[in-house]
Length: 249
Image 1 (cartoon, rainbow, N blue to C red):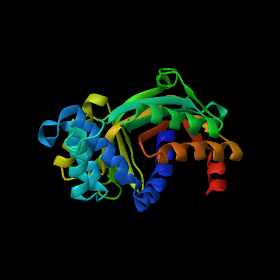
Image 2: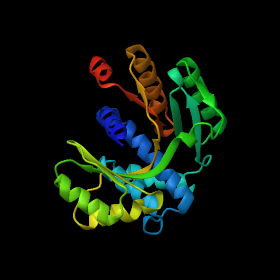
Image 3: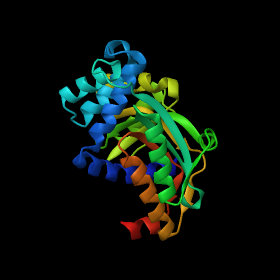
Image 4: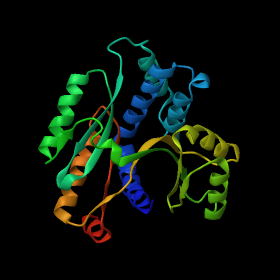
């Protein structure tokens, strides 16, 4: 899982930029609306919604925004219902992508995603042709420094986690999909702050990009997919070699 940890660092840097630009609020709103649509607007009876709200609070999303997203999901605000859909595709050098979308217009989103891939040297793939290369996991993120590495690993494993990836800025804990809520709540119960709790897709065999030009193309495609207004999550199987990452930095 070392590759996942390296990519986590890249995403962590981008997350700080996203927060400044307000994109993180949009992603949180999408997830809250989807959770409310799927399981109702009561967080006490909807574990996914409860996690989505906790994620939104962790990035200081205003209460009014959270409540508006819930009403959007339950249909109280009118308009077309938000739907959840995933797209799969390949970028330059055969890099695999999975994009999770929340949209009220499937035709528009499909055309937009196809256009982004085409303009960046990639193509949309048929459902299932990419996703088999990924494992579905629960992912919990904790701020770094709150607990020692040894204590974190012990607490997480005892709570039922599959893997622990300690880091300087933040710690990442991976779980089986059905254990995500249980592990997160157990960690909260011992006083740890959970900054993010969600489902992720992790590449089984990461593809290392060791060419600067290809790395720039792939990162550009990733950023445009991630910045798309209806995007909730983007998952990919690429890693950038350390020496190339230093050049890009």
